[in-house]
Length: 439
Image (cartoon, rainbow, N blue to C red; front, side, top):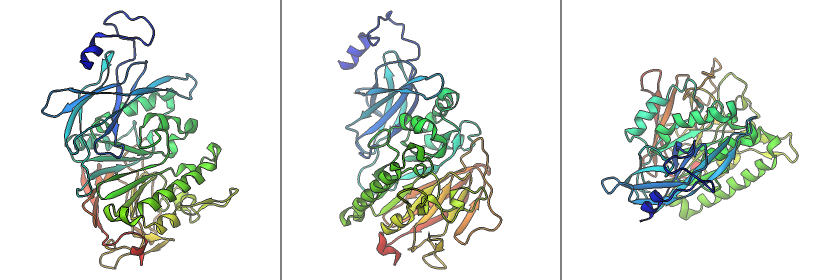
């Protein structure tokens, strides 16, 4: 009855409307979904260029199409460019999902509907093996890995996409039209599986406003940091950019640090670490790298790793915090290359053993995966790798990760330059988690 009522009743946000002629710009676009941390829910986000209602119609695959409806709302986003373009960002949370089931959906209003997409509701509990695609630094110019990722996503190879900063290059350019075009491109990924993000340096314009407004991550929709659980893992997304754009507020470093500490304390409570033993972080600028471009990670006094002593008060870094709370795996991007590190802490290697370095390692493991493809091409390496650098490569590509169970994670690196060849792979095995595992 509700759906029939909405078909028959037309509104133009207080203005008159000729029956059957929708306002210009009400067609949904840039559709993507995100996971709020509850397996019975999913958040659908899209954009229109004019005001319109926010509805999702959905139904279980094989059942009656669109038998369920959910209403949300939109927020007005005014870009900071000269035109002050207005975009209407719609968000709808669908609830009551059956974990693991497939749903078909479309979104929009009686002024225009998207095409039909589908998603798998997230599985519940901890006894399953979530599959991820990981990458950063993808632009809408030279997005070389995008076609392969689109195909693999629609084949059902992934449960989650992690985009680890730097989108579009840059979202704010041409009065945010570059951001629009990028979000249209990634719709073929993000409309089918949760597209989870963190901010990078290319999002900094107008106090990260394009990033804050276009995505719908757990918690505060405009937050630069958040966490969520999936299977046997706790995932933490945060911003490295708070260390580099102090004009937006030095307090952001301290607020994020306090939030990270509280979140890690909660995740490390015995009852929580027992059911979700893996703690994985994702953020844009790495603590370590062996590239030759003089970025933060090439410096021993890395801001992200050690903090900033040139601020008052000094701003704390993150390596000691993550070590203290037993973070297992740290995912990074920013460098337009792939690099796998040996387990490392304080610039020293702490392999599990000579024969099996990633079995019961004595320090966190770092992966840098920033070679998805963008207009800035590749980043080179210094000729001689650091002692903690295990494998590095400049092919365009992305990383796959599967959290097999409470003790095993498998990762491999896909080269798009080599037609999808896996050029690196390893198992991370931990029979014990938390700070006690380092000893």
